[in-house]
Image (cartoon, rainbow, N blue to C red; front, side, top):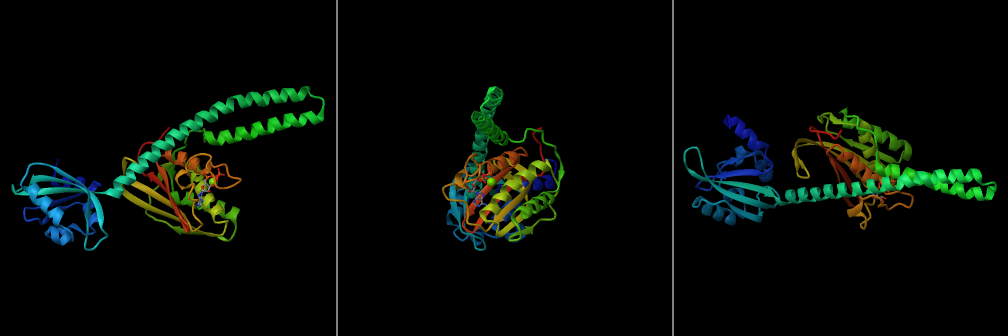
Length: 355
Ligand SMILES: Nc1ncnc2c1ncn2[C@@H]1O[C@H](COP(=O)(O)OP(=O)(O)OP(=O)(O)O)[C@@H](O)[C@H]1O
Ligand SMILES: [Mg+2]
């Protein structure tokens, strides 16, 4: 470590809350994630005893005392912390005995909120599942497309030989259905051009999509913008982003029967995980509608291809949106209940891209 400032910067960049308690069980250090977790600034919290910071401090205090007298790192899973000025927390904790710069014994405590870990595990699961499904679908679509070309060609040859108009109707059906299936396979294969990566203003993407959907849906669909103007440009393919957002916003408009409210919200997340990958800056784009919500039976599967609740839907919109966002190392998530459906697009604001 080169300097104290660099060490402090590193600790403040961590996603884990780090607390140090001295031998009198008073807090002597709190990093940035700790401030967020305890809902206290370090200035306000340091110097306070564990009993002032946590309402049910008995377990924590006795573990601090035990750790002070030992040389072992101890892990506790699923501890409930009741805080005086913030909602209760369920956390996993690590207690490590350390000595401070004056040689005094103290305890370093690492706290990780459990829902944070759960979210990472769920997202990782979602990413792996999506990738597997996407590969399977692409493979299948490719295999179906090849013989389709042969079928169509043979039907055309046959049509030329047939003199009877009534029989030609049948070859027309074969050709028409082969074309329909081929178009469906193209949308399952996704865009086959290489992404054209450039600096993109997310708000321009959202404005373009709302203009398009407004034109389709009419006056009774209201868009509300809740933008974070400090959101920097993202390195992305603007057409692919428009397509992904369009698929999500169009669904919202359809669920609302073209009459209701759609809120477009953007925020920056610092030191944020997308699955297990940690990013310094992440753009969070939310599309929120006040429609009836996703059918409960479909909720866990909406990102799978061919899952649809509309009679005329192909069920590809969301799986394509997910594939397009994952080409930018991002992820689409969804929560839904009657009256509020939220699709959240997470996109890293720096990093590599698929070429
Ligand atoms: N905002 C929403 N509110 C309610 N239900 C939704 C919403 N978004 C998606 N859904 C449900 O999820 C299903 C899957 O959506 P998806 O876009 O993948 O396919 P689709 O809209 O049916 O067909 P298409 O391929 O034409 O988009 C929808 O049919 C709908 O039932
Ligand atoms: Mg759709």
